[in-house]
Image (cartoon, rainbow over all chains, first blue to last red; front, side, top):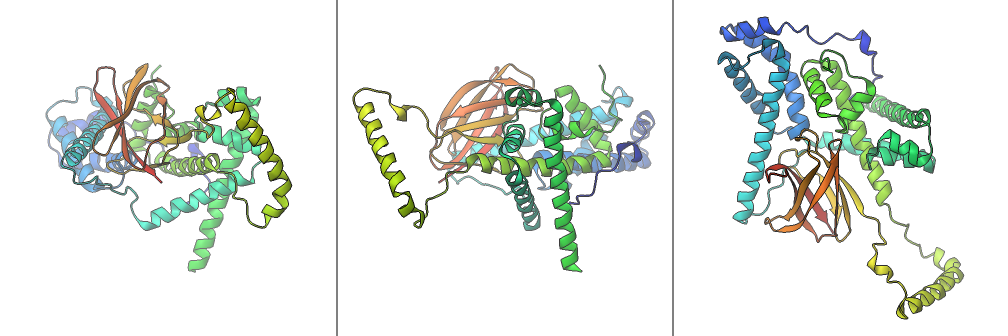
Length: 206
Length: 205
């Protein structure tokens, strides 16, 4: 992960122009360029969604399966409003995630019925990722440690207890600006320490 | 109001999305946008990392116990310890003659755990054994209901706790008594009895 400063939204490329009906029409007619474009447009997004929901295991297979389902259902005419292609893809992906979770629950039940012991799979993709997570945790600990007790309490309430900004401001007698300032400072500090860590790592390698 | 899926996400929206604190309508818009926008995906990925780290660090701060008294400190603390001993003896005497029963109330605060949407078979949430737990459940993506039935089962499926928890803004919290070491599964059911979600919880000694 890199910790570069987030660029201005306005400077970035806009999301794709939604010329979905044309794309849907090409997929329906079996035009390979349509399927290619569908894959190009959605594959990374579907992968991202699946990874957030299910972890990185067997991602390629899952993305592939979902693409087959999407393509087939479009060809079957199940998508009635081509301009709603994004929503349609999301619905299919969500259903697949739900089905996957359900199958995991059933598998776990069957496993425990047979008393094979509970299979625990590690969702962390690799040791490097684990190290990065540990480093991030250390950064966050450092930030919280460096804060005044009251500021730390604000962040703990927000991130751990998931109180709303309104609740925190009311309970701790803060203005919304004070709350935002505390949060944005911590965020900036996290980014800054992360960048420093990255620079150090690059320096060590060079 | 229809939300525009082609607009980039705001900073606050990114963080709320990372924390699962968005409405169903917003979630749909953001999901759709993220399907096609690499720029926002990168921002969400960064935000996920920061939020996870901050939650982990906050949990450690909350769960920190009083520092252990070292040997070198003990001689200096003898007068204070003696005084504390006398006060404690008086308190025990007060309790013995019918005063309050302090052990009935939990003196140790509940251990808060944030349970995120199930990620396959992985069990990420860990909690200490024998300590009351406060389970913060992320219900984003589930059909909105006023309350859900929550059930905790052990690894062989035996129910160890169940109850109904109210929900607000796709969040709910369940207070559970302390549990022995083991792997548990927290299941969320709809009012109709349909199983909606399952979370893994590893209670360690």
